[in-house]
Length: 101
Image (cartoon, rainbow, N blue to C red):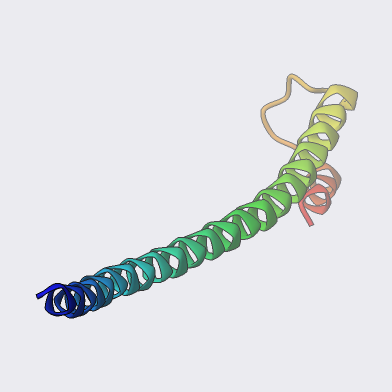
């Protein structure tokens, strides 16, 4: 009887080990999928941050150019002898147009 119990114990132990290994295999597969998804999301976030940084740099350049033009226009307006006039002379209009080119 004892040998039969030993054999039955070995069979049951082998079955439980196989069942445990299958559960671990499922867990490993799920963790691998989760890791792949997380890596993909990190790559997307990194790409978005790089694109935002490039857009911010371009906007900073455009803002600087606009600020320079505005400053030049204000300096020109302050330098006009007859700044209170409603209309500008032809030379004044040409100079004003040149500031925005």
